[in-house]
Image (cartoon, rainbow, N blue to C red):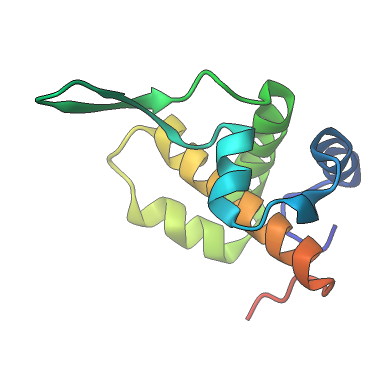
Length: 118
């Protein structure tokens, strides 16, 4: 709950939906489980990177997206990140912010330490 933009209800919901977050050895496994990765369509000759994958835990993903909007308003680091991507579609930037928030949650739970802004 020390992560800016993450309300207690949201954190409880995310952790309840994920179960034991320590079962994911790598962050990429967690991001894939939540659905914050791109969908890729591949044939023998070309590869298309599409939007977010449809295989996801939609409740967790929606919690993270909503928290990302709050984090962009309250966390100076996220505000800076959001402003560096001005000109792109805001929804796509917020998905990237949600990905960063998920990484922060994963790190806080794995390490057992609180979130440090430094």
